[in-house]
Image 1 (cartoon, chains in turn yellow, green):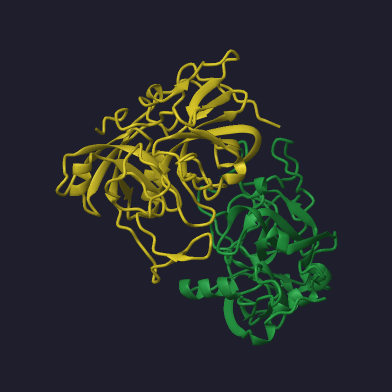
Image 2: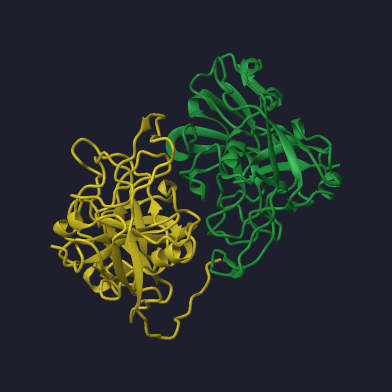
Length: 294
Length: 290
C-alpha cells in the first residue's frame, strides 16, 4: 500500500537565523575505536574543523573517520542543536560572527545525525582562521520547499530553494514526466547503514560501499549525488520496495562497521516518479563553483 | 556433538539495576511509514502479556519490550550493565512486592530486557531493584575460531540444539532467516548494546513494506544474512549473524522486531537447520509464561 500524496497548497517559505558553534572533536576515555576487521584505530577528522578537504575530493583513501569538507557546527543546548540540524539546508548561507575569521561567509554542505551537526564549507583561508567555539550564523531556509512543477509523489528536503535549479535535477525530465536526477551511482538498500530508522531531515544515511579498486573505480567525491534503491526517506528512513532516495555525499568513509560515506537526502519518491541517471565517470554533483566557495 | 567452549574459565559478576520507567515527551507523537502519527506503549516499564514464543508483532505497540526494561541510574554503571549482561543470565527481583521472583535476560535494547512469569511481572513496576548475575562475555568456541560469541550465557549455548558437526561446521537451529534488506536501525552500533531492528516485519502493512518476517516470535533464534557483528554491526557479504528476537512490534519507520546478537562469523563456518522450535522458550524459559 503506497499512500496517495496530494499536492499541498503553495505556502511561502520562511528563513530563520540560527546560531551554530564550531565543534571541537570529542573522544571518550579510550582513544581507540574498532574497525570492521577488529583492528583498533584512532579516529581523525570526525567532526570539528577539517582542513584541506573540499567538494570534489575523493571520499575513500583518507586516513579519517567520517571526515567532512569544512567545519561542523553544533549548539550546546541539545534541543537547539536538533533544531539547527533539522532546519539547516544544503546551500544555506552562513556567516562567521566571532574570532579571527569573523565576517567570512560560507555555505551549508550537509548535515550529520545522532546529536546533530551542520557541515559548513568556507574558503580554505577562512577555515584556517576558524577556532572551535567560534560562532557562525546560519540563514536556515528550505524545509517545506515544494518547487512549482514538482510532482506530488516526490518529496524534496534539506535543500536551499535556490540550489535545486543548479543541481542535475530535471523536474519534468522523462517521457512519463518522472523527475530525473544525475547521480554517480545507485546503491542497493542493503548497503544502507547508520541512519536507517532516523529522520531524514536531521540525519545522514551512511552507505556501506566497498572500497574502490586500485584504479579508483567506484570512488565517490564529496558533493556527489547518489541514489539508494528501496529506501523511503519522506519521514524516517526505511525500506520500501520500489522507492528511491537521492542524497548528496556529505562526509567521507569510515572504518566502523555499519558506517561509510554519508548522504544527506534531498529527494525521495516512487521509482516510477523519481529516476536516477547514473554516470560513474562524468557525473557532476554539488560543486564549489555552484555554491561560490572558490 | 555439543561445541566445546571455555565456559569453565568465565567469571560471574553480580550487577544491579532497576526497572526503568516508560519515557515520553510532551509532543507525544512519533511517525509511521506514511507519516501517520501514533502514540503507543511498549518501551520501558513492565510490558505485560508478551513472553518468549508469543508473536513478536501484531500488537498496538511501538518498540515492544517484553517484560521488564532494566537500567542503572549511573551512566557508566549502566553501560557496564548493558555490555556485560548476556541472554540467558538469571535476574532476581531485589525489592518490592515481587521480591525474590526470578527471570531471564532475553536481550538488550538500550535496556536489559527480562522475561518474568506473568504472575511475577504483574507485581513489578518502575523503580523496583533487580540483581543480575552477568556471565557470558568472553565465551569462545574451542573448535570454531572464526565464530565470535557475544551476549550469550554459557548455559544457554549448552541448551541450544546443534553443535560441532563432523565436517567442522557449527550447527545452529534457526526459526527464520533474515535478508540483508531487512536490517534497520541499529546498524553501525556496538553489537553488545541495544539490538538490530528488522524492517519488513510490520503487521498489516502493504506488500511494498513486507520482507516476509511477520511470523517472528519473541525469543526466536534467527539468522541474519550478510551481517558481520563481530566488532559492531555491519553489512558484509559472506558473513552470518545469529541473534535472538528480543523486541517486538514497531510502528516507527525503519524499525521493527529486533535480534540481540549471539554468534557471528563467516557463513561457511555455520550449518543452519530450519527449526520452528528454535526459540528461547524451548530451552530456557519453560514455565516463564505460566
